[in-house]
Amino acid sequence: MTDRRTQLADNLARVEERISAACAAAGRGREEVTLIVVTKTYPASDVRLLCELGVRHVAENRDQDAAPKAAECSDLPLTWHFVGQLQTNKVRSVVNYAGLVHSVDRNRLVTALSTAAVRAGRELGCLIQVALDAESGARGERGGVAPDHVPALAEAIAEAEGLRPAGLMTVAPLDGPYAGRPRAAFDRLMEIATDLRAAHPAANMVSAGMSADLEDAVAAGATHVRVGSAVLGVRPRLG
Image (cartoon, rainbow, N blue to C red; front, side):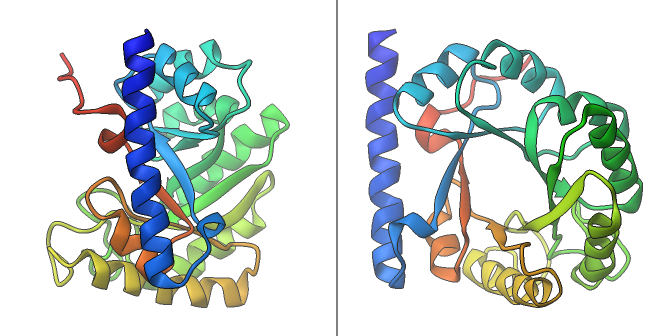
């Protein structure tokens, strides 16, 4: 365990150096960017070590992994983020532990989240996942809604009991005009975020950037970066 703690501490320090350098290069304060460590496929023991090392935001993308892990770590001062594509039949479970869902991309999911949040007596922050590779009216290959559908979905979230529009999330697309151009993709997300904040001033989170492209996200103005392998190491194979 001591070796694992040292490994995580070293990895966190390197990621912290990258974020700090990216903030300095962009003329931003380090406090403007929140690190979310994506702990998918890793055990609750790693989450405990990360918490000891100062991490306060962790993310998961599969409820069947996240729910027991969050329960085991319920005594820790953590905010749990759900970042994967979310099926409506998992919503009731996710609402029990997640403070924010980054992957809201359809009205049916908004309705399900609202019902579950009210039942649980919780307020849930919702980020709209934007698919920069999607045509109007379509969803992206990795989830998300086309940019022109963001305003209507934000209104639906704002009107839903138990929910609040928190901002936007994207994953750098593998296809389309932004393929291989993460900085351009994140710049486009920031344009959409500016329009969103004009209508919903409190929806000021911009979740973008992962281990490979966090510098591009910080340069564009992201408020949250989601880092997994750079902190935890190469993911073990599932199955």
